[in-house]
Image (cartoon, rainbow, N blue to C red; front, side, top):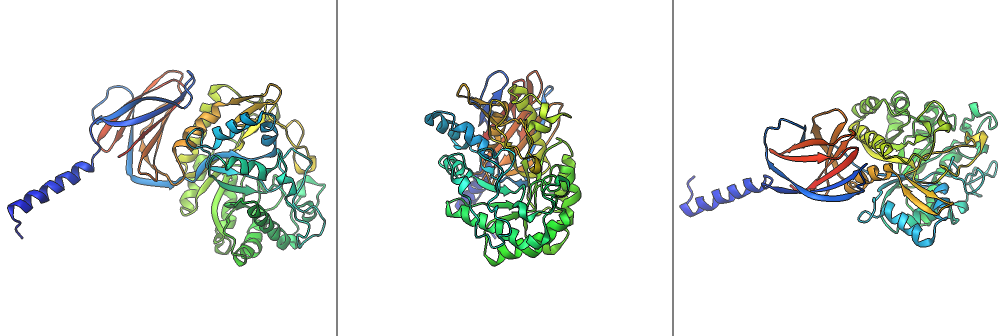
Length: 486
């Protein structure tokens, strides 16, 4: 087929324009935000630019290949507990709002987007004694079910509602223990299992929790059956499989529950690797599982989470709890809270490693605690001991009425603020000692690269992307976010 001369000119001009628009423009602007030991705190820096790709004799080279997409990101955040509200309520009202804005506002704060709440008492539900939502023995019909405590000024419903004024986030909720009357051997901590004759009652307990929260305008996106089974409730994964496929799953299906079910929460990556297949390899149980959470304690075995992803590639993986109370052989003696900037770098590396292992969400444990790492709830029979001091994202000194944003806050904020839900991780290659890079494509089509420098000296990094290159100088002990449009 032949074209008239004018049509040929327009055809080839259009083709050339399309090819040019598919390439990044020379000198393309890249926004830069830095937090560092030197004092930068989510500080905007002069823009950088992608230029023609060159050969470099110094510095670390990372190649970003957005043709290869990996997991979708669901969010970043921490946990709601009564201890946090106790600390928050120690401040003047205007200061309380500033803290909530700093945590949840995506423009003026960290924009936390994935949060944990809890189903009744845990170790930091410390506004009163141990409780569940139905402590009336034998009430299998849940006639006495009540979330009244959660509606108090220090309660979880109040906490969540106040946070929602500043931003949106998904909620996931695990349970340490069901009501004690459902347990066998209540006074024997080593054998506190759930009596199977109460499985229907427990399924109804979960359902009532979701319904009562929804009446308060709070939708629980994910319900996780048990928190650290065999540490708290001493229930085997074989029994969890039975509870899920024969009781909770069918009840939720019958009631058209929109909340998704998470398997339960293994205390560490190795436990998840060993035990989750007991449930997930049974198709009748697997069909009810929408997401697989695990905890990050022991700070190792990331390869086992990668192996879980390879075995169940259709299931999102969430890291849903970790803190500093278990960092040493004598966990309760750790000097807390930890306020040095180096601690933020420690957590930055943990976030990187979990994301590189295909985690779709990363949720820290306590969001707010006081200057003593508390207050904590004490209930020996439920494994909640006195002297439980932990490290939060934000410290509120109740004595001096001041707020301390830890290094962890800033490293976590670089992810929650700039890597919003729906972003996808893209392939990044290249490595260097104590310098890391991970990159994402957002739902708006922007690219975000997080650059971590764990060295005590500055580091030069070259980002290669679509045939062009960018040179960034990273301050010592810092995290740098680079953002650009294609």
